[in-house]
Figure 1 (tube, rainbow, N blue to C red):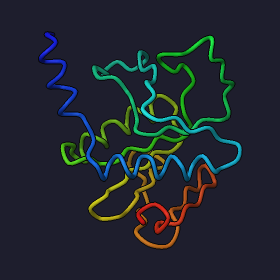
Figure 2: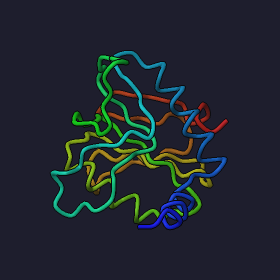
Figure 3: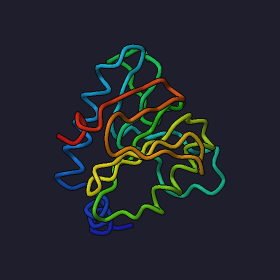
Length: 155
């Protein structure tokens, strides 16, 4: 792949202003949760997936607390997150994200959230075909016992 192709591919996958805002907003809300660590745009080791040809890098990932060692870093996380959050960007399809969710669940992720900015809603998946959508009140993730007010995400 040439450098030009790599740049074009990167531009296609870039988020938008709303995407970026919601990623930061959700990250800040999740940082306030005890007993969890939130990371953004972290690459996950998906080498165990037969069909995976694309890097697995969720917008946000929630882990059990992990030690931070600034002298040693990890490029591809071997430990899988408990939760991944994908925020729909203008150049993504819902089908593309749902395919990622199937892969995340195969890797051992417990819960996946799909954030739909135009609808100001969050769908919480506890399995590939089991979801609940929230557009008012609280987003409730029963798998991880997390509650966030929808209003706090989209204000």
